[in-house]
Image 1 (spheres, rainbow, N blue to C red):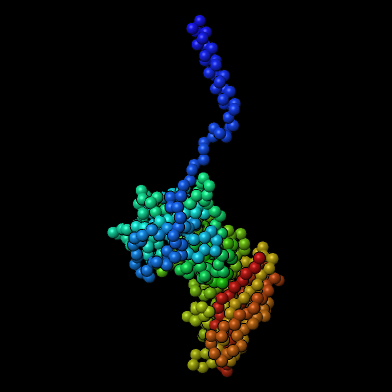
Image 2 (tube, rainbow, N blue to C red):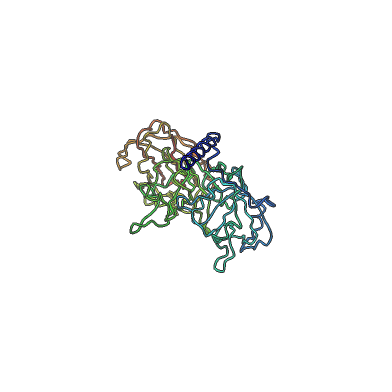
Length: 436
C-alpha cells in the first residue's frame, strides 16, 4: 500500500510539472537579455570642447568631471592597433577626435567599431603626445600613460541602446586626396580617399616585411592620382601581414595618425582596402629618374635632369642654354605604361617655359624600338606654357585622349630641341595617365 501511494505521488508530480511547462512559452525559458546600464548618466561637455583644453605642448591633469561622448573608429581585432582606442564625436561628418591609451588588449570585444562610448576624464592627463592629442593615465615614465586594465571602467563606459550597447554604422569622412588627409584636425578620425593605389615600388610585396619568419612594423607607400603620397603603417602583429598588396586602384579607408612629424595612416583590416580599378600612372619626379624613364641624348651636351623646382618641387628640366645657346635634341621616354583592359584613357602634365625657342613636342607609340629615331611616333596635341618671359607660370596640358591606344602598352615621349640661336628652358611635372 505504501509503495502504491508513493508511485501515485510521483505520477502526480510529473503530470503537474508537464502541465506547468506546457503553459509556458518557449522564449520565457531562454536566457534573459543582459541589462545595460549607463555608468555615466549624462554628459557635461562635448568631445570638441574637451579637446580644446589641451595645451599646445605638454599636458594638463583633469581635476573635475569632464564627461563627453564619442564613437569608436579603431579596432585591434586584426592587430594593427595596440592598446589604444581612437574615437570621434559623431558617426559621420565628425568635428573632433581623440585617442585614449589603455593597458588592455582585445578592446574590439568590449568596444567594437561604431560603439557609442562615454568618458569621464577626471583623473586623466590630456595633451599632445608624439604628434597626436591623447588622454591617458598619470605615469612617471610617459607624458600620457596607459590606463591600467583594472581602472578602465572608471573612465570609459558604453552607452546603452535599450538593453544592449549602442553600436552604429560609421560613415568615413570622404576627403579629396591624401594631402588633405595630412591635417592635424583629422588625426584619429575615420576617413576615405578615392583613386588611391600602392606605389609602383611596392608592387609584389606583402603588407609586412619579414625577418627570420617574424613580421616587423612596415610602412607601405600609397599615392593618389594627383601625386600626393602617404604611408600605410602596418603593425608587426597584423594578422593579414602575409597578404600581397593589391595591384590596382580604388578606395582606401583609414584612421589618420601621426607619430611625431611622420604621417602614418592605419587600416583596421583588409576590408578597408577596396582596390578593383585599373592602375594609373603618375610621375612627380621625386624618385629616381630611371625608375620610369629613358633619357636619350641625340645632339648636344645638355640632358634632361631633375631639379628642385616644380609644382610642387621637384620636376624635370631640359635647357640647351649654358652661357650660350647650344644645339640639342633630347628625348624623355617613359617605360611601358599599360592601357590593357582600359576602355578610355587620358594623358595630362604641366609645363613651365622660359626664354624663346622651340616648343616641347609630345608623342606616343605602342612599339618603342629602344631608339627614338627608328620608332614610329604619333604626335599628341597639348597646351604648353606660352608665357616664356618668366618662370612659375605652370600650365596644364589639358586632358589628351589616348583612346586610340587602349588595350596596348604605350610609351610617352617628350622631345626637346634647341639651336645656337634660341634655347627654351622647359620644366615638366605631374605627368599623369588615368583611365577606366
